Length: 207
Image 1 (cartoon, rainbow, N blue to C red):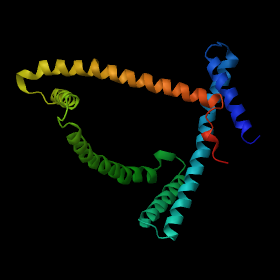
Image 2: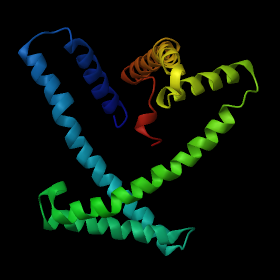
Image 3: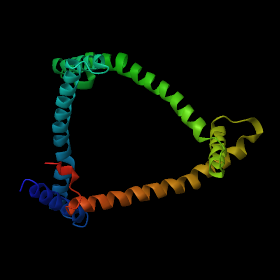
Image 4: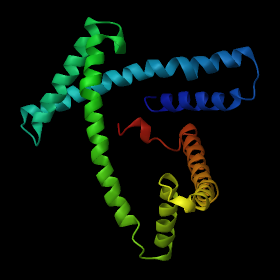
């Protein structure tokens, strides 16, 4: 029963969510809002609590065992404790002055640093990907150059390149994007059916 009960609950909820769209009734809409809108924040709070507990346990273990880069675990614990204490002291949440100060003076600079470093990795990956070693790589290189020239116009060639870049973005690029979206959608549907029908049981764990 330990494994059958979750499968039964998922099957009932999955079937209900499918048929709910075909039942235009106030009761159906009420249950949909209750399940889809009210429950996720509650589950999210429990998941956040478990995540914090797991983070604290892993960080303490790393510090005690002096594992590689254990000093960063101390920074993580101090930052976590500080931000939680600031939230408890001032209950205005993100609008609290201590939280806002830490966000403006710590999180934003760190995020800017990460994105600035990411630009070099992107440039390195683009250099390796855009080498004209084959026909497809050459097409990718030419298309990328044309699209980039759209943002750096070069005199009289601006209009033709802008039109060509717009065609690349709205025709082949959009076609590929739609194919990917359709593939992802089919994958989601097939995975959902496997979960609802009890074929996929990896979410139950190993026990």
